[in-house]
Image (tube, rainbow, N blue to C red; front, side):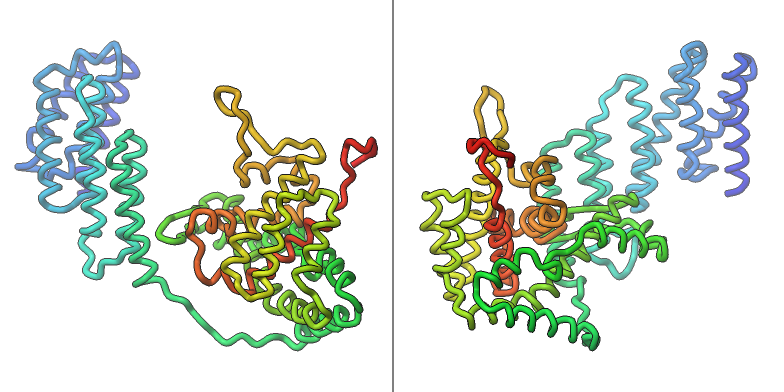
Length: 455
């Protein structure tokens, strides 16, 4: 192997110098030696060594002043040997070399202005075959299969093979679902709550018990720093962790959900955002279990009802009569512990109320489409607008975004809208989060622009 590499390196170097200094006689000699080498491929030399000499010849063809030195006979020799190598490696199931040779043939055919569609499809098929063969490993996994199918999908996208893209979407989802079912594991371990944290929880709950009436507790629920995650602080915490464990910021990370790869992080900022969402959702889980659910118990003891929550909406500066019955029903189903119905009503009504609020202060919630038709802007896009984030404040904005529309967050709004929500979402733990978001929204008291005062 070392001898072949040395020979090819010398031929490549000699050809490069001849091209640079326009040494036609020496270049002709170099081309003849490459042709002799190629002639021995398959008999004297392994098909492994067909690619590099062919690439050297292709470089000569790229030179507008020297390309005529590659005559038809040499061109046919290179194409024939590449074609032989393609068939050989496919039969041997060395699919990595098969794809490499196919890519080389694509480059040659482009130069010769020959069709390349079939070759591009063959490269994609090679990835699909590799998904099953998995480089000959004995213990095959759905995770490795999905990885090669993902490569096939990327290739088909790059070459515009629409039919194959649609086919791969189905294959890939099936592979990810099989991986989740058979290979992913939920690791459970007992967790001891530190005494200091227990005392903190008890202090917070005692404070809520002593507030007195429902109205004061609901007001506190929307402003309590114990119940609103400090976004800036969490980002700083993640950056400090990445400085300490730098490897964690460099290993590519993918997020798989419901048979789909919904995110991949390869760069530092992407890794930081994925880690932020992971920690943010984990804190929301703890917040709901240890604080929101007990506080809801306190509220019920003090007489919280659907009517008292509805009254907050009726008193809201941005109340819309057409929403009253739906919101009342949502609150009633919440108190009836019918969280499936409650969330199917309250989640879209939360979005509608948020849009009502911004429209009332003359911030449009629509976009103009072709033909000058006006449509409501997609909720995720609407939330990403700078004026929306500025109005809500970074902490509440990130809360809404993560819970409602973030693919790497809970994405409750989109999952419910498309019928993809997991049954685990329709429980008190998640319903309390939505209820708190509603209370936060109803706490906004911005003055309408038509009153002639500052908002």
